[in-house]
Amino acid sequence: MNNQQWYKFFSICATHLGTGAPTIVNSDNWCSWITFDRLEEDVRYWTSGLPKSDELNETSLQDGGVWGHPFLFNEIAHIILPKKFFGEACIDGKYQFVHKEQNIENISDLLTNAGIEHRCTDKILEIKLY
Image (cartoon, rainbow, N blue to C red; front, side, top):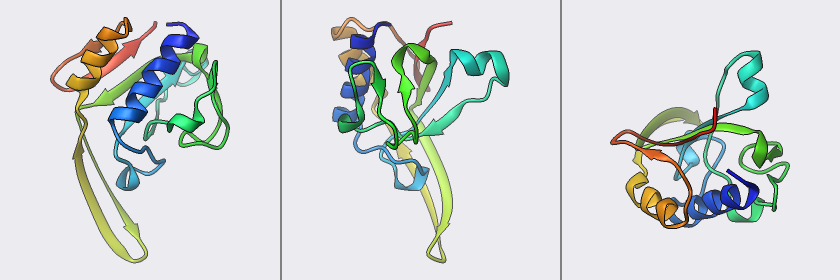
């Protein structure tokens, strides 16, 4: 994956999966990702909604967006979009439970047409570079 392909991937997701947010109950989409550095440290994945279109730079995600801090595209080793996601939270004293689905099949078709290698199953869409 080069910078243009990552940019295209995130643009496709932002356009076709709704608005991402840092908390699962407020997000229209969801993903997990890990960087190459993190693979050498503790192998823990981050989770969040996907970045918005205005958070994309040519080579990275901007600081302070949905993912909280900047990530260079070439640092991303693996990203996973689940078909279904759910979560719960207590917001303003009210319990909220969400169960949502992402149309990963549509995203897969768009990525294929854009020439972006990925894997799509009935449960996840992923780009894995390690």
